Image (tube, rainbow, N blue to C red; front, side, top):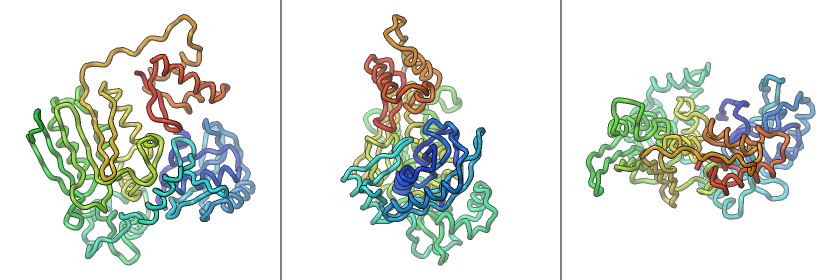
Length: 440
């Protein structure tokens, strides 16, 4: 099982569900949702705001796990249990593996993770998820004639150190899905660790194109190498083409945002598709990063912000271990908030059937100051607190607003936020569970 660290301080999210007590129905719903997306952990002993509700009785957890497993169809393993520490006391974490099938609850609902909660899929979304599971994960397929000797031992040694594993090279290669038990190299292993992945997978490279006014090509370069090299080389080319090549104070595009978009492109693209690889086009006013394949699984642009579903989970895991993924499931949000804080137009994500394009716009004139709130009593104290929070932190979610006002019902807080949006004091990004609010 490929696992990620459990960071309780970040609150519930795409890979982490919080339950205040060992409730079988809650465990079953969270287990199905995690298995249908990218796996993760169910933490028992914390409520949705991260407030400690323990201690948790081990026998009660065992009974709840057993009853919850009986509700999942097909069955989900809920026996990977560990303790996690909080300042108030220990909590119980149940690890859930990403499923290879589509799981449902007894009433037929197919749940997935959406932001910090669960969401039931529609009929079309269920069919899309079934199709994805049926085709399997291309990254696990073997590369014909490739051998473990075609992998870079120095890169593997570096990954061993970063993983903190006390095990041999072969153990890690098997655990991460880089090779099969028969010592055959997989697509994931070649893309992450290969000496020359494009020798075996010619379409896995990248291309950078600089265009000037009128659409004329001023510079073009093809790139090859494993994924981390592609990301680094693409960033170096973009950085060299910016207007300010010698300082980090006034870059056209923030490095963190661009690298996030590049990592998303190489990790989430469809490697089944032949032809062009990842393409970066640099225009005078924008940067376009294009990756082959539409959005994976059930994802649509409507739920992209708060949703998560990896087409290539082993590639994502490897890039996380190398430090190229900061927090799994939060990349789109970091891109949008990063560009917004840079004073640029909102990031555009255009999803077509066979390609996803991300547009980052070059920062123009400084943005006007944030609007001032009226002092005539038309807004309540909670709304002033929410607005101040956005000024300090850049954005606010309903979950964060509940933390500010724990004694107030969620429906009241949602009305507060809607009023701030209607009055043009804030703007809403995303929808439903993944929505957040920023300055206009």
